[in-house]
Image (tube, rainbow, N blue to C red; front, top):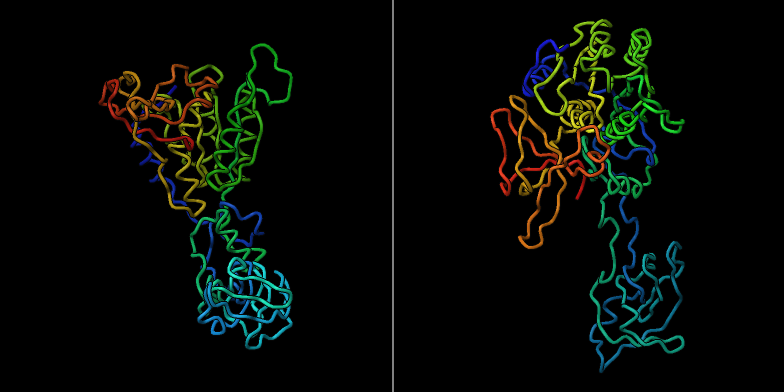
Length: 412
């Protein structure tokens, strides 16, 4: 039974009062494993990029001054003295009146300071007719023009994505110093839940939450540890929770938090350490039975068994904590403006989150937020919901065609 329903704001305030996230430390991370990690320190380049003057076009390397005055009616003649391919070191030294064939990305030979594009020349055996003039370093990327040695390339606190990791590779790095991510234990509770891959008996359901929640943990930048499915048994639950707590920084459970005869999660969580349960029920819909505890200064979020409700409460309450433990800036969910596709009703006295599917109204040239009619536990709520519309406790409804803010679960 719930001790006392608290408001959503009171639940957030209680979390902040009991937990102050700190860094998990730092470590060297292999470049291919650094995606979505947070940089520990400023990264300063130890080399110039590019490390040589390189051609940006296919053409001919020349001394720019030798082309001055060249045009379509009065070409300048050059003697060809070789070719330079990408990835090789030029062996020739360019003299006055000489040109070297060069491909995109190849280093300029000594003595050259510009490249004439292949479209602007005519080649006759070992001679070249150039029909346009070029200026010094035209069609050339100069040494260090992208990154100078000693320049800060990435700053401490940056999240490493594909672009940032590419930049690190350009500097020749194989590892980078990052903050350690928190370890998040994930387990599902219930006699009716079995792991995917097994034969599904009548009355059983496959474990959804461990997989959706673990993926959401990965999106935050943390490391989930899957503890499997735990039956509605006090001893099994106590043993698994104790192990999970000892081996992780945060524990996420789903199921076993309502008012049924086998919903033991709140009382077991409260019994394994102090201060124990600090929130036992929140005045929201869906997600009312959500329970929050702290043991050994570690958060335990016990979420409802309904998949959509569990994921929603994770995003609203657990996600900001995990982001902070990852040393990331706490970011709100992305949102977009739309218009209600139907009248949206709230649950009396509870903050209501209505799952919606976004549809483009071509005639009115606007997005329509259509409420999903499925129950919060239905799988379609996970697959069809683009996001949710929030209705405050003191508001009874939102009219059809009223503008609403949709907080997004995914890109659209």
